[in-house]
Image (tube, rainbow, N blue to C red; front, side):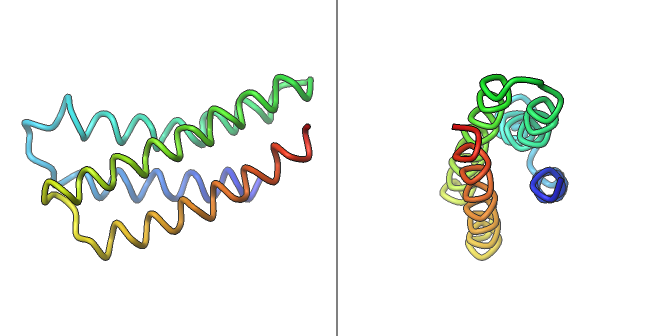
Length: 110
C-alpha cells in the first residue's frame, strides 16, 4: 500500500532525525516521537489485516491520530532548539500529505 510505504519512510526519517538528540531525551522526546511515528505504519498494517470496515476504519483513525501527535512532537523539538525549522517544515508537510491520504481511506470506509 502506498500509504503504508509513505508512513514507513517518514518513520525512518524521524528515527534518523532523533539519532542526534541528547541522551537525556532517551525516555522523553526521542521515545515519544519514535513511538508515534512508527505507530502510524503499524496501525495501517493492522487496518489492512482486519476484515470488517469498522475495524479497518478504527485503526486508520488511530494512525491519523499518531500522525498529528508526531507533528506536535516535531513542533516541540523545534521550539526547544533540537530540530531545524526547515526540516520540521518539510516533515510537517509530508505528514499533512499522509494525513490527507489516510482521511481519504477513512472516508471510503464510512
